[in-house]
Amino acid sequence: MLAALALAGAFLTIGLHFIPRRKLSQGFGFGVGNGVPSNSVAHALNESFAIPATATGLALMIVVGLVLIGAITSLDFIWLLADVMNALMAIPNLIALVLLSPIIFSPTREYRARRP
Image (tube, rainbow, N blue to C red; front, side, top):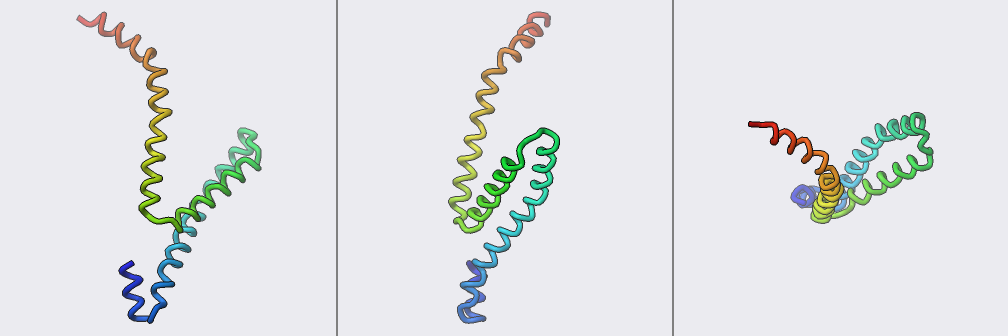
């Protein structure tokens, strides 16, 4: 915002319109640029595991849509969304920890029983 205000004084009000559009195009360009390797991965998944091209194409369209939303959304909302998604990622890990704990506890008990 400081850069936009600085350019607003130098170029009348061009800075107030230029900076947000520049940020939008740069963020969208970076996102699409990072999507190109994803396209290669989608092609490999299609060939190796017979995943339909429509499924990988739909996933890529969702990614591009999310990049666009991320480019125009406020930073506070993005941080909130990132925090929520990180918390949601913990749920499958906790479930796996509970389900796999007998596999871990059994050898641990055997080791402790043999240890002097």
